[in-house]
Length: 551
Image: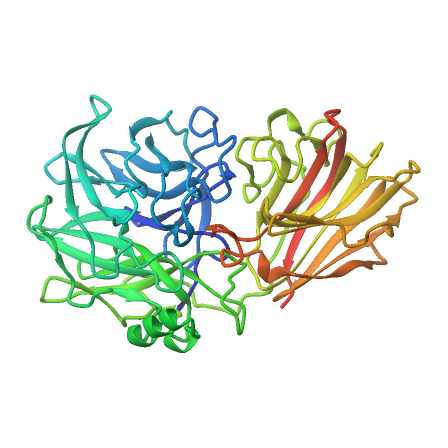
């Protein structure tokens, strides 16, 4: 029996929404402040996934200028009906103005719908739905009606901010929500009820939600009702899935400020935010987010990833997972033709900028790069024109890819002629604006280019080399970085063959949700950037970006 190893989507791939069309499975994941918005993956066997679509690629669909870190695209929902794909998504403009523990305060979260005949697009311009909460989804009933659900947010102090799951009918001919808004489910005792998905089987409506908060107490819950408006009864196993193996010990450790690790399962962590799709009549697949902390820590620099579990429908009318905690390996013998699993070689990836567009794995921040990027000036080289600072939430010239491994390396070759310290470019490893590491060339005070580091540590900017930055004899330099678990070391080379380390060993574990303040929802990225705070748009040229697994 061939095994599927979790996670199936490594690195930052949070909030998976799975659906099946014919013999093909699709998963849509959150992208937060990274552009284009939403990534859609495709598989015929649930083990081998390929990036098949980046639907929100126009500013008319998604304009995140000024959005906060970990704002933007939250929890998309992908479905298929009437010969079209339907994608629901939230654009979060404000979320972190609340007190600690993510309670109350205002959130500005706007929900939209786009459609397309294929996941590759083109996708329509958005239809506005509502702004009452986040994590929306669309359910297509077998009578032809469509229903929109989302969690509703209560900003009032001393209230349950996760105030329930609300339901409203959607009329696609009128392109708007119609009829009354009904609160159909207020959750289980776990609370923090969000991420609703509706399903129908044998006359029953099934409501899957996420609960417990998107950290180590995260969970998948399931409820059902013969009526879409409810009331909904909880699954006999509530939560349906969680990485907490001992809830009593977990709550006691939380209350006393103790160590929660002994209360967790031994496999993947943070299991929650699930969706499901049929494999056969009695077997379904559950897609959920998960996290893999660095050994001995609670920090997950790879972000929240996507895993799969096997669900079996039993005579009681409920789907049951193999266990109440997530399994690291799963199998679906119902899917024929799955090639035998083989030991995978270390992952390697390289973008040489030889095509009209950069590789699909690369994303920019909040907006398309537009005129800030050019592949036509010097064929085979990416030109990035200097733009706003590393702290900007508007127009950075930055192109980066997800980090997907605990041990990895990345390199690039750069040409840059900075006039002064305001112009700098190089290799960036980042979580968000407050936590990032930059190996950059800039113009020294004597007019000679220099190489040094910029370190953002919880929003505080540091220059570890001080006045002892590395002078360069040329405007061309090779830049690299090596990461092994929590250790991050930058390096450089004048010729690409002899390398020199530069700066101290930095803490890669800080590039994680757990270190972000007040919290975060993304993961580590590595990429290329060019900054010019003088406004002169001085360009930097990059020959390639290479990334590979090292252990």
